[in-house]
Image (cartoon, rainbow, N blue to C red; front, top):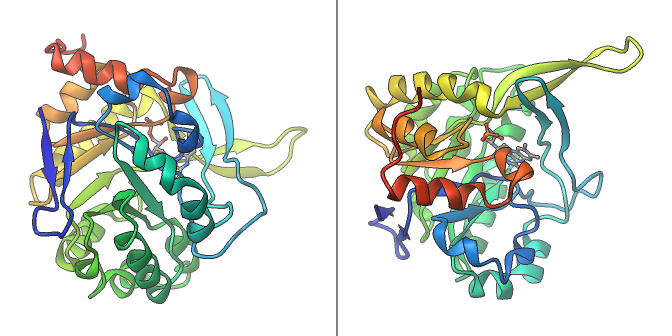
Length: 284
Ligand SMILES: Cc1cc2nc3c(=O)[nH]c(=O)nc-3n(C[C@H](O)[C@H](O)[C@H](O)COP(=O)(O)O)c2cc1C
């Protein structure tokens, strides 16, 4: 069940199991030291790091919904350099590789971030989160902004580069751009666009919906993309069991990521990996 990604890079990534913990859902990865279950997980993705510190909040807003979890994952926190300074020694001791999620606002930021990660041995791969770009791109087609961000840069990385696509934002076109720019894998996706009424009749606020309710949506999106895209796909959205992961792998994904289910039980990804290895049956 081992999976190799980015074989042309200086430091390719070998996943022991095709199951990762999704961005922002492992908590502080430095606290994972001593978690024996981590040895069953393929990799852990950090929460998205910005180039500069943003101290507005370090915690994503999360609300339980009847059918899953509503979250607002605005990237925030001390930024890439400060996080690496604090965490790299611990990351090197963990039994699962650490993939750093990057949330760049511009091509120059991404170039510097890729250089930093490439020269940090504790970083096994990077995952580019296009969220900040999608926001600043409001007035022009997001695809053009993404093309300008990625073009010519991804090939500079010595570690594998994943690009995370949010469903509902033109993922087919963005997948082609990421593939052309040299990405090693695509992560699909990033929760589905959703909204939540604010208390006391306040306005609606934008969120993303994650959790078991979106697994069938992920399944359809992965199957569609797999039929037109040669890059390895990493399915993310609604994985809570080996059976759900197995369906996504059979529909064309090479690996899966477990997101909000980790909030309820931090060992979910490890359990999913064990169930898969044991040959999980299809869900009903
Ligand atoms: C609390 C929380 C924080 C998250 N933080 C990030 C983040 O920093 N970067 C990112 O790309 N995705 C983030 N996500 C999205 C997850 O990585 C994942 O794409 C999403 O939850 C869908 O997977 P799920 O259905 O398994 O929850 C976050 C999700 C949650 C619930």
